[in-house]
Image (cartoon, rainbow, N blue to C red; front, side):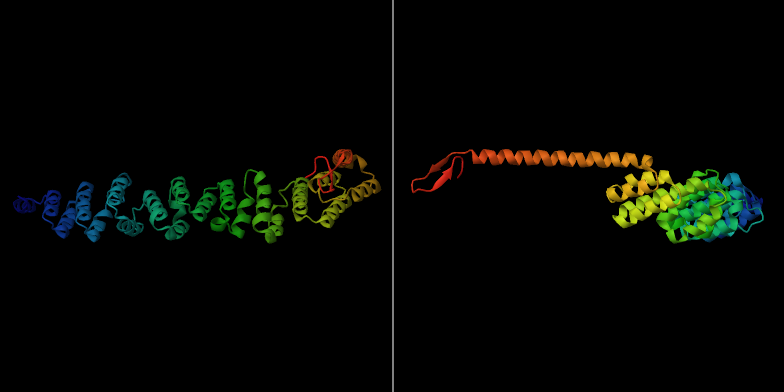
Length: 343
């Protein structure tokens, strides 16, 4: 008997019960007015949910703005919208709520999470404006689940997790790498191994910008290790080039720079390209036979193996010739000559 209840509740000014009655009558605007007079969270929720069910989203938003300011009520409101698939309306309501005087961290956080799921193109702008007002660990998880790598780096930077920011940029360069941001963050990492991984990353991904990175990292790098790092990379490049002249020039450069260990390592990295006589002369002229001896032992073993195979092959050939020559000659019916065993 909603009509009767409406008259009675209105008469005694019980606006909370009046609002509840009005939603049953489908009088949503009047129900919102009653909720405003009652001004209780329970009534606002009841009318809001009824308006959502009735797809009166404008009125539902008016009610919702009185609910979202209570942090402990926010989750239930969000779930009510989400469970029914009204994501667009929920986002619109939270966007409107950000300007409220009583706006709190939960609102900014939940809107960021909703953006990550349903409007990823709006998440970056939201974070740039309100990153200090969101629960960063919670939003980090949402960004990672949504594969929003650029936003993830932005949050790692603000949360001072610089190592994770650099790792993310290197793992997802197409989406997350920005030159100025990378150079700025890499100087703040705690794990020094990331310096060398960053150098390798630039060698593979942005080789023309490597010098700019090295200028930034130079005060922090172990220069001896860095040189060895590049020496190793140079050796690998020379080996893959299949260019004998290039490999021998690299050997000469190592000697010029007095990097005997690199010279020795290059002998094996570029083993198939180098000419033993050139290596022998170079080692003798620079008095570094000790560094070259493992290489020459390998060359000698290889040559001896080849000679042994040639001798075995030659011996087998001679045996076959002797066997052929020792076969008796026979004559066919018409006087043709054959050796035994021939067709």
